[in-house]
Image (cartoon, rainbow, N blue to C red):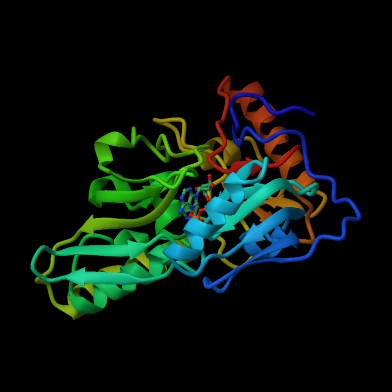
Length: 322
Ligand SMILES: Cc1cc2nc3c(=O)[nH]c(=O)nc-3n(C[C@H](O)[C@H](O)[C@H](O)COP(=O)(O)OP(=O)(O)OC[C@H]3O[C@@H](n4cnc5c(N)ncnc54)[C@H](O)[C@@H]3O)c2cc1C
């Protein structure tokens, strides 16, 4: 099966077939960073599916990141960037080349003079929302139910409750594989609904700065944040692995409504099921494979096209070959 253009996908060659290689981890001296061969990506995605990364690194700081990029430059390999893996479907056949995860690049800094927060790529965006709420800073209460990182949020233009990253982003620092660091403004990022021009790009978001509004009380902002979380938990299935909404909403319609109306709630292929609580979620409810999920995505697309004459565009990003 080949991918059609309606999927956001990387431009990686073929798929990765693990060979019996005598590969050992590569230590990057002085950085504490290790580049490990054949690491299972299922552990690093919210779907809990997916095969092996040919090489995998989790740099802990900028130096580790830059040296990992230098190693990458010296090899003839494709590159894949990973945040919390909460919007990804990784092929059962794995991902060739080097996968760099930002999960250890966590930090955040609040500037009371400007009302801006600067956070590392790997900082969970929900944790940032709680930190802001505890200080009585308004502006990202909507992010509390999003299980991704700041970097993934910048790339996906993550959003909820009618607000999104593009509304708050002041700038993002990005590192290119050739080692160049650039500061990008929202207008450089081609933002639209759940898209940016960083998708499918080799540039890595290192950190991002957001404009917030200090001055409210902790009680007020915590209340809104708690309310947002409760609303999400009551309307969306958080109890089983998923990637959140699978399809972009084809405005003015909601993808979940279109799917629900044609009776697909509860429909299952292998271990993958259309959620009863929210039809735009596919759950890994019984040891699903990535292939089960992919086949269910395709089935939903076919059925929606047949009944509604609309092609649902996936929001989830596919890595590797399907
Ligand atoms: C239960 C659940 C609920 C969700 N609810 C929402 C919601 O309300 N709103 C919403 O918008 N999304 C939602 N999502 C989807 C997901 O959390 C967001 O898309 C999130 O922004 C993805 O961040 P991530 O760190 O997991 O990115 P990943 O899934 O790891 O990656 C997503 C894309 O960003 C790229 N990327 C990641 N980090 C970087 C980086 N530092 N630099 C460059 N590229 C990078 C990856 O290569 C990939 O192309 C939900 C997901 C789940 C599981």
